[in-house]
Length: 362
Image 1 (tube, rainbow, N blue to C red):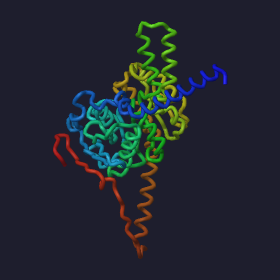
Image 2: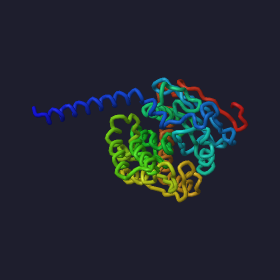
Image 3: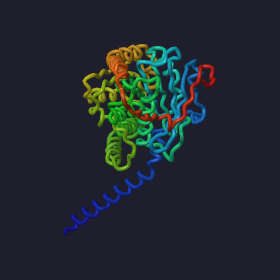
Image 4: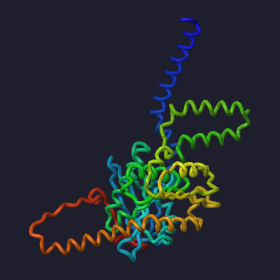
């Protein structure tokens, strides 16, 4: 073996050892990585001060849902007091900071504008939900799945009229939920969400370096080094761009042109990668990351989307249910023997309380 071959072999061994060390280190620091993405304590009182729908004059049920791994998460089920049921139920998954109470202006807008049920779903470690050892991608997906299953079984909900709605991080949650449970929802709406955490990390580093007084070649070198190390150390992924092409249900993409956190190109790429036959990209002029929903066009787009892609499913299921009732009533007189099935309900694993706008329990 030549001296050069020996040097190259030694260098290869060193690089492998460094890569292994980085991978092991990243595993033990995954909780620290989570602290760079998940901000349940922003603002500082967000873990114990959670505004309620009653404070906004809305009827609601306070839900506590047990997830498959035993963690308890909270949710608000907001409904129209004048109706025993609604055609459509919208389940909202929020961004990476705050709690469900901070999304009350959005919930009120949706209730008043769409006349649908609204569910504000909380994540583990956020608001009044139970705190796990650490917040993870898989944990949040378990939470989302549990909320979806629970809501589908509620008396006021038509399971054929469920729309999952996610903003920012909640959009990534919604996309993954739609991939895992495509037959448990009718449509998906995502707003100002990202393609992946990896690409968001690239964006953040580029922005940081752009404001540093270093030469262009050094910036390129740093970006190249970051790209090489990133796959070894990054433990949080949320790679929506890798699964969006698997979705077949109707998808509405809402993108604010003035989003100061997630570049609008992320939404455009997700839209182009999506292969659903019914999809639309709604560009909202002047929409910022957290306030795009306040633009009038958003409610118009949501209403049109729901009327076209959700309401027909509800009407069809209602017609089918009515036909079943007719056959069942006609067969009662001829029924000689029968059995009763024991229906289970997610409520046996959960606690829920109903409140009126004045805060009193119903």
